[in-house]
Length: 324
Image (cartoon, rainbow, N blue to C red; front, side):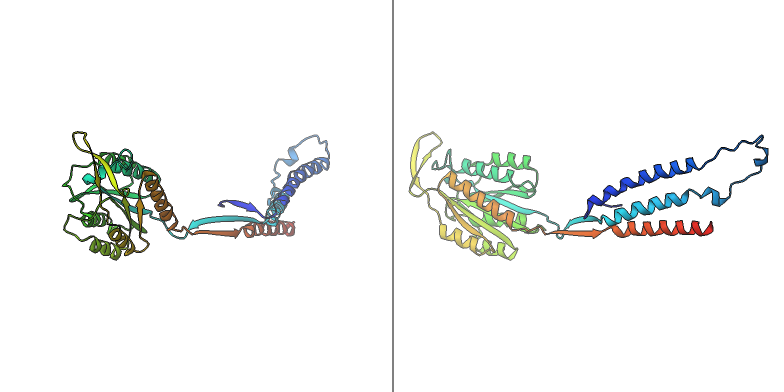
């Protein structure tokens, strides 16, 4: 009947110990007033029938005990507490759009840019157990690796399968963002987020990156862009293991404009794996604080029902006394 009951004056409940003491006193009292009467025969009582008044004789004491018990509980002021969320949080839907072009094999991140990004993204995914996440990879073209899912086993497997050389080489940032938008635009989640990671400039694809960013803004999608790569010449190894150096270009201004056109979006620059890890941690914390779950707590006084029980019991006892 009641849930999460507490008492304002719990010490008053100790008075309930009086009830069994009263019962002992009552039984002892009636045992003493019974006088033994010796009669030669019980035939004269053969037709004796107990009246209702006699049957209910002890009921007055029972009702008095019930009334006193209920009154003590009422004086202790029982309260029930209910708690509910005013809004139902559906979580956050996130798309990770990761550049898998050839330049992501740069070894300024250990072991290389792509593997470092995958490792950091894996830890990010593990911390978002209540959110749906999708994976998009892009190079000269874009491809959905995993649609929105909460299945982390699938996400981890598909993330591990990401590698360079499977897609046409190049950097189609606009196509990568547009593909990510397509995966999340119809989501009913409270917050929709795209994290786009790249180390190059837009040189492929059919969709302009800024146009794609404006489309994300229209759908209420927040875009975080991450530019990866150290400044200066970067070590690479070709397919034969021969080392060479190359200076990778990064259009930071474009990535910054893409993020800022969306509500709450932001651009980050990662020059090593530690910096990249810190960036994902910042995004993780920012997205956890954007949804406020308001708790509604209500305390309800429950003494009234016990007071009613006490009054009813006393009323019934009075009626029995009048009938006597």
